Image (cartoon, rainbow, N blue to C red; front, side):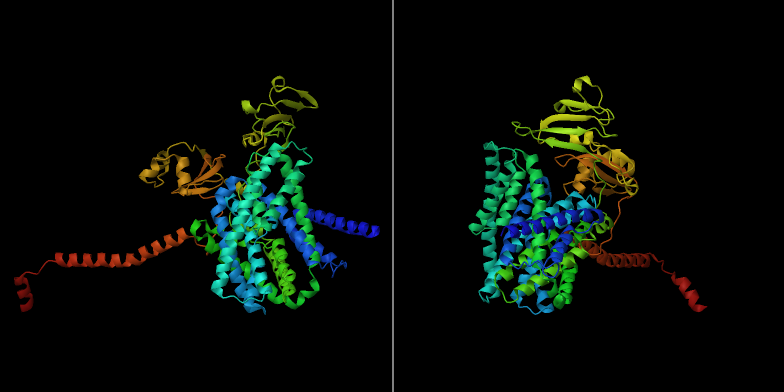
Amino acid sequence: MEHAIYLVTLVGTALVVAAAFSSLIAFRFGAPLLLLFLCIGLATGTDGLGIEFDNARLAYFAGSLALAVILFDSGFGTPLNALRQAAAPALSLATFGVLLTTGLFGAAAHYFIDLTWLESFLLGAAVASTDAAAVFFLLRAGEINLRERVRSTLEVESGTNDPIAIFLTITLVEIIAAHANPEAKMLVTDLFLGFLINMGLGAIVGVLGGLAIVRLVDRLNLDHGLLPIFVLTLSLMVFAAAGAIGGSGFLAVYLAGLVAGNSDIRAVTILKRFQDGMSWLAQIIMFLILGLFATPSQFPAILVPAVLLGLFLIFVARPIAVWVCLIPFRLPRPEIAFISWVGLRGAVSILLAITPVLGGLENGRFIFNIAFIVVLVSLVIQGWTVGPLARRLGLIVPARLGPLDKVELELPGSAHHELLAYRVAPGSPVARGERIPRWARPSLVLRDGRSMRFQDMGRLTAGDHVYIFVPDRYPRLLDKLFASRAVVDPEDADFFGAFAVDPARSAAELEAAYSTGLTEEERKLTVGALVTARLGGHAEYADRVLLGPIELIVRDVDDKGRITGLGLSFEPTAPVARVPVFLSAGEIGDRIAAFVRNWRKPTETQIAETRIAEAQADAKPTPEPAVEKAATEN
């Protein structure tokens, strides 16, 4: 018995270490990390090194707990401004998008493989949700700075679509296991009512649980080493409590993280670091277990239809669902195209595919194998192309800041305050003599191994270590002061225009200087307000607005979304991607209006030509009778 404990521990830790080392390969080559984790599990499983693991209940239990940890960390790290910016399109994708993907994929599965309609929709529900971990790892590994709106939409969608896919999958498994054959109308009604109850209870428990976590952390004077474990345990209690009363535990734990992460919770820096590590560990464990549970020797018999279904999901089902859900939001076509492509399927889809096995369905293992291959196809095709596609569509913007060396420390007894340690970077504003705000004067400066007070050491120089005690919700100004200038790629040298424009200047000055064709109302606005209005009321870093012969580029915005810096270019410098599909509602309306104008234009031209001909006929001189008579006689 003792020997078995050592052996299991050795194998388990070796797998985790191997997965951790594989992340270095993924960062180096931009490979999908989830794909590497799954391959390690497959290589050590039944058809690899021979490790037998066929416990569906244990795999589902461990995967569910790991997913709860990941969702809490995802919610904890989602800022409210990202939620406000992307809530409407992301929630549309997370609800109607999941339903549309399930329906389209289920219809294709019914005709591609030998499954009933309910089993086909069950397979569609299992692969309907996206995997946030895979997507954002690829963005970090490739150092891709996406537009904020796109990143926020993908982040919020991936955090909120899992509970809906889980509800659909479990409900369909229960219906099939009970050998029920409900009418379509009754099935839709039951699903709708069950969905409202499940999500409603989950949302209530999640919000209340998040508030309780914040209150307990602030009230209890726990040791800093115990505090992160306490918060993680409370988050799992929220997950379990919501599920126990019939709600969505996954939605509850995500909302609890969202509430806690956007509150003035104590020790936020310590909690973020701990949860980041736990999220990595949860991902590794979940992916390895799911890889171990699979049996690759069963794949060849279903490989062709499974690959075809994977391609259908990538090129048909996901794009149609995204386009339909985003029609009302007037997003640019390149952004819609990128969101539709970055719909990677991952561990959640494989985890949900275990539920038919748990439910004892006749085709349970068959459905699991199909879903597993669909996930592999998604990771191989989409996972390797996220970065190149973002560049091709012009969705990558230059980094705001260059290198920044900063450490955040929370001191005992300093509620809502923290100690920041900066290293002055060469070329930073502080190194060039920029003044530090009075509220953020350094408490200590280290130079060449000697400590001194800020008042005694004169001007800061590159290499100095500066310690500043500030509130934990400090503005981004400090990062900008101590960071070096961002290294601009040669292709982005003219990205932000030839020169700067003051957003507070009058738009009438632009009209007078460049004849931009502004209306009378627009001339009364400031340049910043004009750009914001042209962008639909919300401006973000690197947004662009074309005004006649010039183009205005947003160089920076403050914490409240107000434009603080603009650039002016005399010719468009951003890459323009021509996407022939994904028209928004606004573009559809514009095209219909243009078609009507063009259709009516020939008619108006014909009327004008007729009137001209009539006028010319009326103006033609009538020959004199004598002249006519003489002409006749001759």
